[in-house]
Length: 327
Image (cartoon, rainbow, N blue to C red; front, side, top):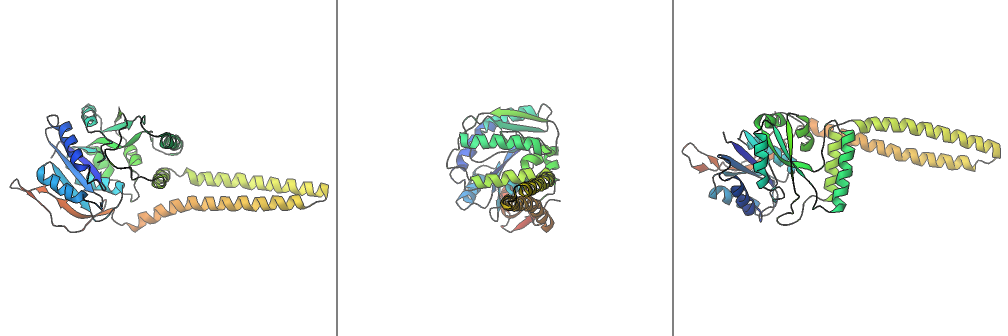
């Protein structure tokens, strides 16, 4: 078994894999006796897969897994964790925003007895337009979610083997890894690091995808939106009844029914809007239930390689689709 496995999800990173290779080798050489790097190609449309093949041919510590299409980062991380063979497993991005040098500090902390060491960004180099919404979101998540979610904490972390096995034992299809890593518990430590700009290109997380991911996280770990809908419905009904009674009293006193018509119209509009809101909340939960009941695989593997053979050489597996499901 390897001492350390580094899982790196990759999507259209053809220009950055060589830099990642050099940075990881420099950071781990002489400090980690045995390690492997598992590059997970998440259906890239550029030369990421050929680059991964070349790196695996040049450096026997590097392996790759290629998915049949783009399944998303969550599925790519899950695939990497399943293919990692080390008794310690690190997860990091391929764009070098997760500095490999920080791994050395994280490994020292893990060796002190923790099961998870999480790198936490200080967001000092992030734009205000992105930093402020993120802080508001994590404040909301802290109030709503059943597990703690900290601002600046992402997927950059090092896990012990039993923590990895605990994450892999969770069977849900729609995964929110930040919450899952927090849910499994175990002793967790945090290492801060300064935010680093991407080595190349721009982030592939659009504002819409970030919103979708954030909503998924809120829905995955609490049912408070459902209970809030119930409470809001009761309050709205009471306010509507009170408003109608006041409008009727005013109409009886003044002899004019225009106020009643206006109140009824406003009430219908408000109640209609709330009904759509409640249907949207129900739809989020029903959509998750539907995804869970289908039991489709999280991803399909197109190609894996190279792997150590008994004679010490490296051999490629045949490129055939393989469906992998959580047990």
